Length: 136
Image (cartoon, rainbow, N blue to C red; front, side, top):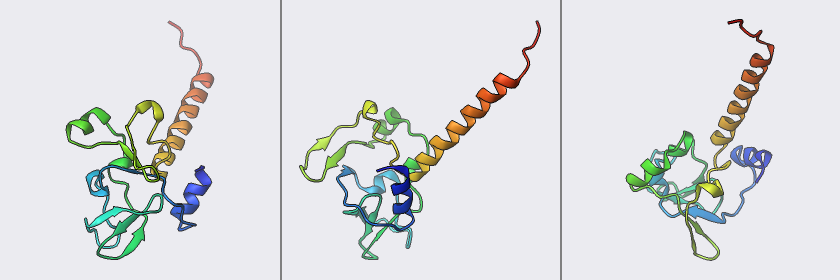
């Protein structure tokens, strides 16, 4: 899914059927129902959405829980948090691998963070090129 499709989805665009979900429930990742703040939720059958058992609706979470910021994977494992995913069609577990870049554009916040990092890097490079060299 590209950035435009992700933004359209988050803006309430068409629902896309989920192909994977994390093995642990959304509560484990500190994701809550945006309507009532409840914890009786599970992964929706649609990507980037959760299902609330109390509201009986699919929601796009307002906050992505621990996915809102940098994640220390090793520390998360010590806390019992797993990033292994479940393939919905096959029922097979897809083990987490940093090489697979599981978090790539998972949430629009991560996409925004990458854009921000890119802008900062470009600005630093431009400043370095235009800054006169200091004499010793």
